[in-house]
Length: 195
Image (tube, rainbow, N blue to C red):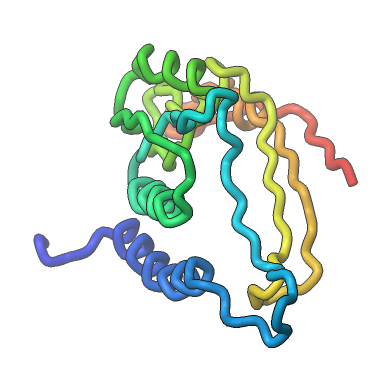
């Protein structure tokens, strides 16, 4: 009915509720140092400015589901940090037939894009816009770097790991066919793990 909350919206609200105290703590002023005159260890990192000192333009695709909530939170953090960033926003959604050419042009021109998740259509031989973007921009690998931040309590200590995932081949290539009605087979290549 009309009074039901969609599961993705509920997940986004839960994430926002859990994230708000952490964001407030990270963005709040540092407590006074017990060592008078000591250099503060708290630093703020900004995105490097282009050579002319102008703000950096970033292509923004809020996306579907909780994408707008996540990208909105990133925008708030950037504003709170006074980061020299301005956003060029495009409405792209997973049910579109393709990524509009002006969006690809914006990403190429700006060389930076903040993208929320795009819904992936199921069946019908429709390619995901996520896959279209990866292929069009030749984004071969995805790099995720995970590490602990000093002073931020976490479940696990001494985490420092980089995960590199191939992005355009194997299960991500979109090479699949329907063997019999309702049964889809995906062509998968060999994956390697580097340690």
